[in-house]
Image (tube, rainbow, N blue to C red; front, top):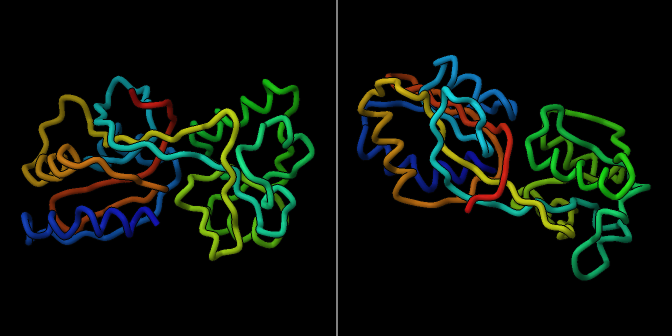
Length: 219
């Protein structure tokens, strides 16, 4: 999960630099982090780009490919190479309640092919989406790192490809505590892949919300 990657890559370094701070991990909805940053409920957030608010500054971090998630038993799982959106016309889809930009881009590509995707269910939990796909109830567009074949899922490349770009966001013009500045510096010095969304809510000075809003390719 994204939480595990953040811990492995950053929190050990962060704790060495700021040993007096305690941090808890909380999951958030896709659009929650940017809103919390803008309203100063948290100090920094991880969001899908671009973040359109003029109240927020964003540091681009990483890109990840979006794939079509299908159960191993699905006929498409046996094919080699990218799958054209036009072939998804008659497939049922399970989607998150709060759709990030890469979901919107995928849906728009379906519309470009002359059909509206048949969304049979929306749920706020990625785990539920993955379980329902595994059980054969439908397909979904997921970040590549969230499609684990050990869970009975297969990720299929899309044609054209869709990407999710991630950035670190903070309130423009706000005077940040030294701990927050140090956390931002950690991200400035290393590019990473962040496959999902979560919130980090420390127990001392620094508040961090991590989630997602909208997206476009970096560079």
